[in-house]
View 1 (cartoon, rainbow, N blue to C red):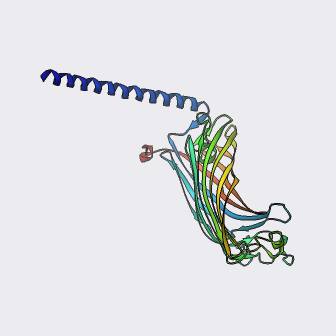
View 2 (spheres, helix red, strand yellow):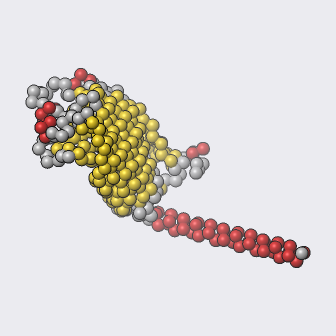
Length: 353
C-alpha cells in the first residue's frame, strides 16, 4: 500500500514537471514568433508606441436611396438627406482610437430648408482597424429626404424652385462588416486610416470580408415620379422595401508612399444573398436574390512624425432588383482631419491591454 502511494506521488510529480516544461516550451515558441513578427514589420511599418495623438475631424456621413431602370431608359431617382455634417475629435492612446462627433446645424446658405427640407437623423458609424483585422459598424436612421436632379423627372421644375421633399420617407440601415488582412506582416491599414502606424514602403494585401446588413425604407405613397411610372408598370406604386444581406467579399488594398505622403485604395466585391420584402400595389411580396455587394475605401494624406493630415472615405453599395427596377443603398462617410502627435506622459504610458 505504501509502495503504491509512493508510485502515485512520483507519477504526479513527473506529470507536473512535464506540464510545466510543455507550458514553458509553448511560451517560448509564442515569444519567438512575436519577435519574428515584429522584426518583419519594422522594415515596412513604423510604429509610435511612445506617442499619442489628438485630431479634429470634419465628417460627412451619407445614406442614399437610388432607384433606376435596368435598361437605362431614364435618369436614376436619388433620395438624399438635406444635411448630415459632423464635427468632432479623435484620440489615439493605449493602442486604442476613439472618436466623438456632434452633428452640425444645416447650412442655410448652401441647403436652405425651404428648398431642400430638413432631414432628421440618428447616425452612428465606427471603423475599427487592428494590425490583422478590422470592422465597420453602422446604424443609421433618416427621415424626410429630398429628390436630387428634379429637372430630369419634372418638366415644370426650374432652378430656384423647392426640390421635391418627401417628409414621409424614412430609411433605416444597419451594417456589420469584418475583414482580415493576409499580408499584415508588411502592410498596415491603420497607417492611412487612423495614423497609428506609418507605411514605410509601398505595399498591398489581399483581404477577405464578411458583410451583414439590413436596409429598409417606407413612404406613404409611391416613390416613382409620374413621368417614370410608364417604365415600371408592375411597380409604379413602389413605396417600401426591406433587404437583409449576407455576403462574402474578397478584395485587395494597396498603399503608395513617398516620404511621409501616401495614397491608399481598397476594393472588395462579392456575391450577396438577399432576403427581400417589398410592396406591389397594396400587397406585400417576398423574394430571395443573389446580387453583387461592393465595398470601397480610399485615403490620401501626410503622415509625419509630429503632425498628420488627410482625407478618407468608406462606402458600401448593395443592389437589389425587382423586375426591371434596380434599388440601391449607398452608405458611408468622408472624413477630413488634421492631427498632432505628442509624447506620452503620466498615465498615458501605461498599457490598457
